[in-house]
Length: 540
Image (cartoon, rainbow, N blue to C red; front, top):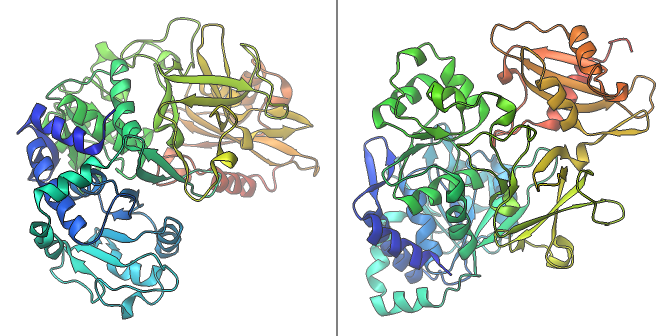
C-alpha cells in the first residue's frame, strides 16, 4: 500500500518534467514537486515536526499548497486543511479543535489579510515571539511560517525562506529514516466538512486512502496522460484534493489554477491552456456559458468534466436525467457510488447515482429500527469500505461507526434490484407535512422534470395552522423561461400525492439569487429563512 513518500517518488519518476501545477506564469513539474517537497520536509524535521505532528495549511490553490501538503505528509505529519474563507472566529475554532502545532500560511490572499486575521483568531498572538508561541487559547500552537507576499513578517511568525534554510540541518539518512516510519494506515489529512445543516467535522483520512481512492475511480473517468484540468474548487476540500489533484498525479495530467474566478478571464484561460476537463459546481458552468464572450471562444479541447454545456454537442447526453453521476461525501473521500461518466445511464435508470464503487458496500437501513431494508425500499444509506475515513477528530470511533465498520451517512435513498443507488435527500431535511414524511429530493426531481425548470430546492417551512410543516420550493427557471407557480403545482400534482406537492413555490431567474455556501452547496438553513420571509403573508 502506498504512502506519500512512495507516491511522490513514483510520479516524479513516471512523469518527470511534465507540468503538474500551472498558476499564471508559474509552473511546477512532477520532478520539481519531489525536490521542493523533499527540501521542505527536511526543514520541517529540523524545526521539530515529526510523525503525528499536527500541521495546519492555510493557503490558496497553487504550487505552495501542493508542495507543503506533500512535504508534511512525507514525514508522517497530519496535515490539517484549513479553509481560506474562514473568518477569525471560524479560524480560531479550527486551530483549537485540531490542536495545530505548526501553521503554514500566506500573509495575504486577494482581500484576505491572514496575518491580521490570525491575531484576531488567536488571543494574545500579537505579543508572541517567532518560534516560541505560547497562547492560553491555543496551547498546542508553537510556530507559524508565512509565505510573505508583502515582504514582511510579524514578530510572531517566521518566513518560509527562513524555514527552508534549515533543510541542510537534516542529512539524507535522517530524512530517509523518518519517511520509512510512515505506514499506509497512518492519518495523512484532516478535512473539515462544510455541511449545509450541521457544524463542521474534522474528517481524518489515511495516507493510503488519499492515494488509492482517486486511482480506483479512474476506471470510471476519461483522464489521460497530458490532459489539462481546470477547477476553481479549493484543495482544502475533497473535490479539489482527491477528484482533481491526486487524480491528475496518477495520470500525468496538469492542473490549471487561477487567483480568482471571473467568467471572462476564466474562459480565456481555458482556451489558452487548451483545457480538456472543467470540474466544478453548477453555478460556475452557468456563469461561463452566459458570459458574452462564450460563443467566441475556442473550447474544442474540452472533452470531459462536470458540465455538459461546455462539451461538444456529440458528447452531451440526450436527457439530463440519464447523465451518469455519483454520490459522495467528505467521509468517503468523494464518490462512494458511480457509473462510467462518459456513458449515458440506460433507460429505466434515470436519476440513478450509480452503483457501489468497487471496494465499497452500501446498505439501506431503517433509521429507527436498524433493520436492513429490501431493494426498492427507502431508508438511510450506510457505507463501508476502503475509502471510508479513519474517524472524526476528537470523537471516539465507537460513537462514529456502527458494528462491522459501517457508517451512517445521514442520507436517505434506496437501492434497486440491479444495485443502482437513488438519493432522496438528507434524513434531517425530511419534511413532516400533515403528519406524513416527505423526502425533499423526491419533490425536487418531480419539479425539475417540468418544462422551463433548471433547478429546484425543497425545504419545510412552518405550516400556517401551526401544525407541522408545509412543503416549500425555490425554483430556478431556465434562461428565457417563464414559470407560473400555480401552473407548476398543477403539473406536479399529476405526478405525486397531494401532500407532497409544494404549498409554496418561489421562482428565481438566477441561481445566484439563492443562498450558497462557499463549498458550492445550497445553504438550506438560509434558504428556509428566505422562504419563510417570502411566504409569511401568503394565504394557505
